[in-house]
Amino acid sequence: MTQGIQKTMAISGAAFVLLLFPAIIMTGLLPPISPMRNANEIAQFWSTNTGLKRLGLVLLLAASGLQAPFGALIAIRIRQMEAGRHSPLAYTQLVGTGLAVVAIIMPTFAFAAASYRPERDPQITQALNDLGWLPFVMNWPAATIQCLAIGFAIFGAAHEIWPRWLGYFNVWCGFIFAAGGLVVLFKDGVFAWNGLLAFWLVAVFFGLWFLIMAWQLWVSIAAPEGNSAASAVAENEPRRSQLQQ
Amino acid sequence: MTATRRVTLVWVLLLVLTFGSFLVGVEQGAGFASVGAVIIVGIAMFKVRLIGIHFMDLRVAPRALRALFEGYVLAVFVVLVALDIFVRP
Amino acid sequence: MTLLRQSGAQDVAADRARHVPGEEGIWVFVLGDMTVFALFFATFMYSRGKNPAVFARAHAELRVALGAVNTVLLLSSSLLVVLAVQRVLGGRRAGAWRLIAGALCCGVGFVAVKAVEWTQLFAARKGVGSGEFFSYYFMFTGIHLLHVLIGLAVLSRLIVVIRQTEFTDKQARLCETGGVFWHMVDLLWVVLFALFYLVR
Image 1 (cartoon, helix red, strand yellow):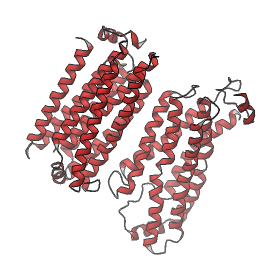
Image 2 (image 1 turned 90 degrees about the horizontal axis):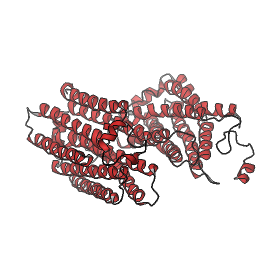
Image 3 (image 1 turned 180 degrees about the vertical axis):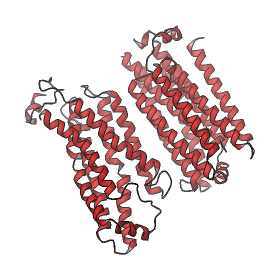
Image 4 (image 1 turned 90 degrees about the vertical axis):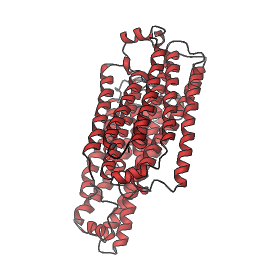
């Protein structure tokens, strides 16, 4: 695992956000369509600018995969922080990463279906729209699992790799992201899927989290002649280093 | 004054303020509502400040942190009062 | 700058040595949380301005006395925590755990009163979907309640830590940090009490 590979993995998170943002705009998801819109209005929405929207959806899928190497490097950092043979928090974080990729893919499929035949019965299109929006905003477990894993790894770190404030930041973000889970209860107001608190606040910190974590991943890349357990240039033969523990 | 006495006095003050604003809250008549809201919010933010300075020990914190907190208290007070005064149906 | 050096002359010593209360990172959390709650407060006040009659009517259904009791409980619990932390930082931690236990009881009391309140409201068929006032009420005080529960877990941990035989600066700092979190929980309630229970 060279420095170059680590740097690439680190900025994949930033790249994810930078690709996600225009893709979301192209698909017409920003600002979010109100949950109060009726079926005809939603059918109308999906019938306009179909080419652009579909392209946006393709880009959303492309972007989603970038979370994988990003999350993997975070897991490595957690592994480096934890003592012992096994790193439960690193595994937890990887599960979160997998879910995070799904968190983008799944709603995108629903939006794609909505966009595919906009001339169909509006009720069906509205249902697909709901199937896209609800998980898109409610997908907090993916984010919160990662945030809490990172936070607890930092607080209980045997080897200090990341600053403690980052742990607090992650725990706080984990709670903020959970606000998205409330949207099924509301069709308007601040906790609806287009609401100030459940959407906008979460969206801002979602993007910010990737940028801050990318920065912290970058600056924690150790020099090639780094020391033992803290060294980022661990073997590409994991078995050997495990035996050495 | 010892530290113990100081925080205990602050606590008493907080209780007095709570009771006082409770009275204001209960006594509010129709026309009194807006003034009452400003007083109540003002007392609440003052209590927040007391908790921060004396309980959270921001008295002894670096000036930057203290300034952030005081700024927060002031900003929230101003914004809430402004919303109370200017937002109409 | 060992925290354990501050004892009887705490006030004087404190003025000479400015330090961040608790661990620095906690302030990232606390200030962030306070800011989000400030957003909650502003949203509430804005909505209230738009629908004054509806809000005033709904507000009348709350039992202000219960809210006041809860405020007193949290303020008192904060005092107990401060006293405990002062003793811990002053090197006199023996018995300080009892103060934290007292604070814990107050916190449990808060949850109990809240349970009574909410049961009454649910019985009156008020829920998170019963109009704007109550959706804000249950959401914001609910999120606050979550903080209280986490705070209770933190306080419990502090009791364990204070009673440990091995106790260094690190544990002392942990107590101060936990205290800061608890005071935040208290401070947020002070504003919630004012906005929901007092302001008409």
